[in-house]
Length: 520
Image (cartoon, rainbow, N blue to C red; front, side, top):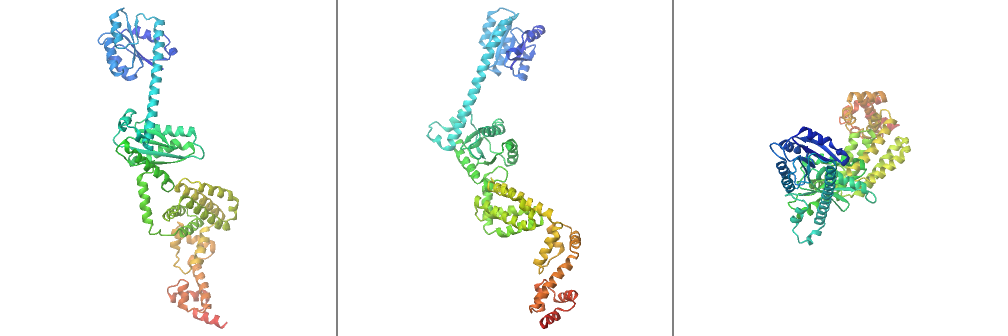
């Protein structure tokens, strides 16, 4: 609708003109009226009308003075002059201020309608022209950015700063923000349009930069560098806007540069970050610091990780076996970092993950045959791992599969903690096993864990451990080992203590038992 402000010092004429014709039928809307020139200036600032219909004769500031002041604020404002006097000099003066028409009171309805149609056509043409000018400026601006980034501008003799100024690009420091979507097959035009729209809303509309497309990516030429404190918020806002598109993408920020001629360097940095997205992407905007952080991490890891990838894989199985979800998450992260430190590439890391998860699944299958019914689910999971866009996503997919195994194992075994404890005792009876140490691993109170063990096995933890050790000691004694050697092998550092325990459970001393077995 075309907004109209009516200005007349006579209330009846003012309100009469408001209701004189059906403005809406001609695509006009009377937004307000004013009783004098000063009030009209205030209403103009409030409504910014497209058309002002003003009486030429008013006390104080007359119509001609009002037009003169309005013209300084809006050279393109449309104006219709009203006057009760057939005074040609007024009409002539009004036309020097580019008034669209001059109407005598009482206003002729047909004459006013003719003016309204003409003004509407003019306004429509102006809007179309302005829109086309805006579009062509955008095209030229984007073409200029693209030519600088690809090096095609070097053949243009016109100074770059001059061409940049012509298309509205100005600034002292620039930076490239790059959004690289990953789409299978041909790019979807609708998705591309929505990505561009999101970037325009985030950066171009607030005047923070100019959006462009290049080599299946979208970018923003930022007129001011992004602050580090802004990155997380910007990433979240864009992620919220793009979440319904069902695509994966990386966001990378290039180096800060001092002029348009250097933005190609910022673009190259951003492209380099995008190429390394699998290792760098942690669900935020990639920055040059991400690259240096990875380099530092790689240098720190060159001396070798604390645990090998094989050891980490073994620990991962035990974490799944006891249902420690926090440990699973931590070990997967360590495993990914260890593979990176070894110099493994993306596809190799994915293959190793699938191989390890397949091994864990096979081991878990022996404990829970019901897992066989979920083989397809795990096959689909392996396929998702192969398609993971980043190591962050890869770990997320792997964690999901391992959680499914843990859920199934948890349903199959009541008091699985006790089962694991028994396995630990039989494999590590010669170690300094303590209930307090194990309670920390299982995140249980030691008293509760001891009660759980007693209720399940019928024995106290230390009693069970002693019995296992004494049974092992009997075998060693039968093989002819000396008593002090046997004591050490089964986990007793004090030989006298071993004597007392052996006599308690066997009924005789270790030496007597060995003699008895030798004579048998």
